[in-house]
Image (tube, rainbow over all chains, first blue to last red; front, top):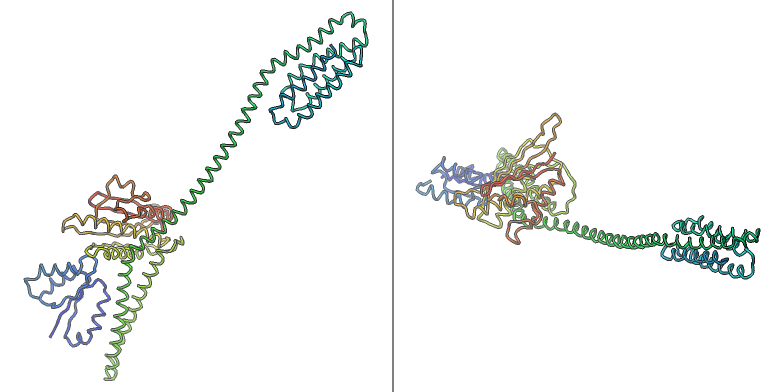
Length: 83
Length: 441
């Protein structure tokens, strides 16, 4: 089972943290991580890779678009689509 | 007629006494003149009663001439010179009359009317002269009194002025002390604004330190398992990860350290020591602090922050915490302006703060280099009526209790007086405000 998770955080250093914490799972192909440094970038990623991501983990406090804003934007624009 | 020169001499002494009564010379001459008047009387009485045939006149005339000679040689009596000289004819006439009476009594007897007339004329002459000089003396007296009054007045005014000067000096000292206290309290006030931002800024690196440590422990466990299994390659890969994690831990530890140090520096009384500083770093740090400070107060607030930092910026010789305060103040103002605008603007409004730095070289072969820091917001802007006043101390448009009115005034002092730079404002009401700080390298 291949599960794709999108992590949205303006701190780049969360990326190695996730990769190492889920080292085994990634190695076994159970989990796959994608990263975005801002809400805007996350929306762009979702547009390009629809129907792939099944879980989004987002920071709330980010410059520009906040996590809450990102959530409502995703709900508004993508809720007709299953992804 | 023998007694006339004595009377004249006596009156001369008395009048001199009177003239000197109001002058500072009074103490010097008064007792001597009194003595002189008694000497005149003392000589007059025996001379008139015991000497005969002309000798009293000679003696009186000589006494008078002696007095004139003496007074003429004393600088203190110069102002009355013309009056004293008026006694000369009487003295000369007396001596002539006396000598004639002694040497040629018959001739004298024949013309005694003439001699007596000469003596009386000399006596009258003194009074005539006295009357004319009286006016002069009165004027002199008046002038003297006015001088004394003026001296007194000048002394009073001088004392008054000295007192006022001392009071002003005290007030100035008080003002300077108060200014120092105000600067210090402004620093503390801005520290308060920063606290929330600082808490956020420290929390992030601390989280990283904790999380990377935990992950590293897990990785070590895994590495032990791999080594037990004999998978050396995997173990080496894990070791590389652990090494990277430890570097991250160091990095974030230092980041938190820097923030705490910056906070301490910010609140410390300025040491005023300039040091070569990377303005990009300072500006970026304070932009984040200001943003998170505001976010902590108002969770719903959000703004886009755009930075155009000139990578080739030279180090500037500045007092980092002072310039940090200036930038913090500009950022806080910018965030405040967009926040105010957001209250009334529609959903389309996107609060944006732009920070840009660039290096400027003045034209010419040896052009001086300076750094320009621009902070622009798309907030409420500043009306022209207010623009003139924003650098004035205690001027604020914020509601009572929300602003000290010292931020820009102190910023202006720091940039202009402390660093020889400039602050320029470009603004359009309702659209944008751009503060440009220029500091020579």
